[in-house]
Length: 95
Image (cartoon, rainbow, N blue to C red; front, top):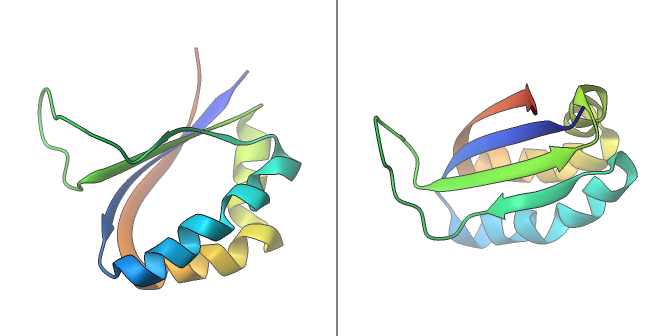
């Protein structure tokens, strides 16, 4: 069953964050991951959405999603992201 990583992001350093954005796509391939949403125009319909950016990634299953997030391939870009933004993220099974 597909799994999704959903991330709320507030970019604090756009220049450094752009470096992160360029590095991430190549880390997804080995885990079967793909972007479904990567920023873009967003409107909150109900409740609170504390950060102005949303990213949704799809993976074949929870195991692949977790493996990507913990991988050596993503470790470098993740460290860059953590210096250039703050974020909330979850992994969730699809229907």
